[in-house]
Image 1 (cartoon, helix red, strand yellow):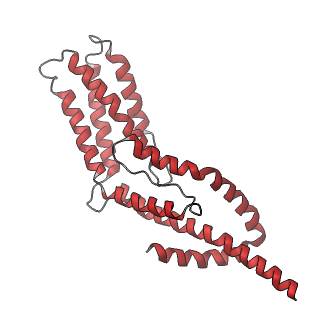
Image 2: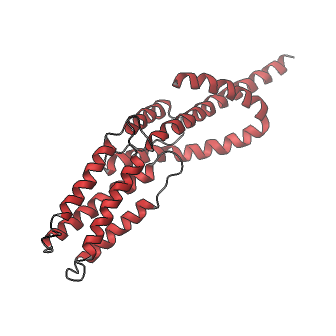
Image 3: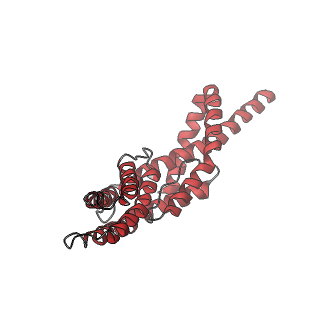
Length: 234
């Protein structure tokens, strides 16, 4: 009887130990799903998703302008190719996990080639009709980036990332991108995420094996712990 109680105690302790990190990550996953909605429609009604499209549109207009002078100024060709590549990359980038890390990185990568192409166009001897456009298009991109920077989505992402960092190493979900118009903030988010990758993979493999043996018991604890953890995030 005593041995049975010891075994039951070990099982109970193991189930609780497993349920806590699983519950934390379930709760964080739900929280990230909720917060990711502000990428499309923030508290002020602004959409970062639409803002990224506006920046790409300005970059495309810059490419169209440069295309009209590519024959007379062959030095533009390489700059055109680089900006065109970054625009296409941004158009076809989708994180798919509510982190928006790929979208933020692709957006940041637009600025340098756009500004280099605009500067080259200013040196290329544009017509009087066209000479105002390079600087205007760059200003459009910067203005839209400023709106993106001020979106309340960033506040939500920062708050979410603080929760993830505070609960590390039990929290193994990916951090969310913060759009600040520079590569460093994106790289910081990616670095924080990559630190978790190996541990997350190992934990998931272990949990799968352990879960098959104690699935019913653990699920009960997880559901209970998830409810308690969810209340901490409210």
